[in-house]
Length: 304
Image (cartoon, rainbow, N blue to C red; front, side, top):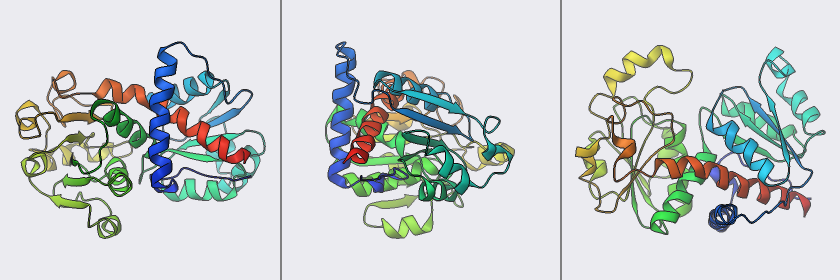
């Protein structure tokens, strides 16, 4: 039995990540061709949501159904975790009853503790520090539209948040250059900047980041839990909007991505999602297929 968790992209080897992305494309094509594949027949996933989400719940629940398994939705109101039961105790109990667990929560330490005490694979469906499942979808989307991202330039515009930090992991894993444009005081983790200094740079001018970029990515300026900072952040990020005018600085065949939900008129222009650069709807769908490949991989590892 090889118990593997997926808490950041770097829980995979580079070869495993590339193979998983290829498998996600294959699963997507099979689904569209009506080919039924049920490698997870009889398997049950517990989905623990301490942060709510549309795309995460729909993609994991649908994915488990398509793989032949089933999923249980657990909110804080449904579990003892929401009433103060230690994470360690919940992990021990829940993992004895299901085959795999995904958690969407706040502090990353919460999911690392859960994984430490779990007897089945644990998937990070989002923490305040990382969002690796979204990166699987993003990298699958780039692969489908443009091929390998190796050696390309990626521009991140906005907050140095969990998505940005997962892009830093991806730059290291898939060998691309990442330029982060953010206001002073909104940088990603200094430890990660130091670790990936050969791949990642920070600039204050979005135009400098977008110059010649093959992929441009942004996210909401105020993430879940930062609602009280919304007005302050809108002021700080003025000038960091991704719009059609600034996209003209990118490479001629550049792509634009956003993990959604998007706030039109703030981090993006009103029409950016429908622009010629946008692959946002493919990116959103690919959460389903990338996560199916991930679940299949982790359960196969568990069976070894």
